[in-house]
Length: 481
Image (cartoon, rainbow, N blue to C red):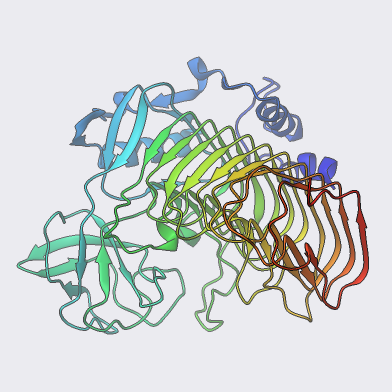
């Protein structure tokens, strides 16, 4: 599985990733493989000759002084780079933006030391009047910190962002006009897709880099050597689509089935390398596309939700050599939505999340997932949480091996309705809180638990809970040395 995953997911869309690396006059499978091999080798320099193939932020009028609004200059740069098939290069500096910069197919985005992309100061407000279908405005309790041109969102009671592309066009007192309308259609997320009661939260937060649905195809994006500062603060509502990097997924016919809009493509194949993401208001990286993600050698710090979020039916991802820290109260270092498959999580350091790795609540379990050689510390709840599968869709092919867990506070592993599971050679170095069981695998089949070490044994029950599990093998575990 691992070898096929390393090569196949990114190669299947030849011509969509990067530029002509080998100089043969065309972009083809050889270029795709050259770039992937380069990234996986761990080298930090770009394989692209930037002297020939880039447009720079400052030559397009961006200032990068940490005070000037560079939004329009960078939007022009991104459009020009896409049209001319050239890379985007951020000269050293701090660039302030007020709305998401659009990712497009084949875009390469590079920075370097002391290159920062930052959103301006966040505001949090609430609706003082309901916002209903057909409106092109909202009325807020405060407009402090909100400006014309800002992107903003409305958050429903469940914390989901249902208004992803509202751009402020006018502010008159507490009445804020914006692009598009309040709508009950989910066709292209053109505005807000439902009615909202007074009191609903409003924020001018947004994803710094984001694909934009059927407006653009967005396959094969490469982001390298940037520092992204999100807007997270304690008073801001947590909104899933306001991750610092967000790749959307849009399926033919839309979500409602009656919109009459056919999307040209789903989003896939993104590489994020040597990127630092700080203070994301939700996930550090949220990829809701079809698959083919590589996240390597990145730092994701103080995310309000997940470090990396893989969306429903996501296929083929490599998450390797990263350092991730959360806020300790929610989310997972790596989160799998429903029916995720073929994921490789290797050699990461993951600290202060609710879970180290977990799957979707009330969803369908992940398949063919390998989590190995990672260090997990100060995880609040179950470190590896795969309890959310349903009986009619078993997770399968899960391997948790050679990980170190520091300061265990709860169960090491929890799984339900799983097939073909290997939990081996994991070491728990310290226990802060007594778990009822070290490992809980219930209503599962073909489970091997081997060579694991926990010092000392503090379980209040059996080390392994295997209720209704068929064909369980336990070998050479050390629960009490």
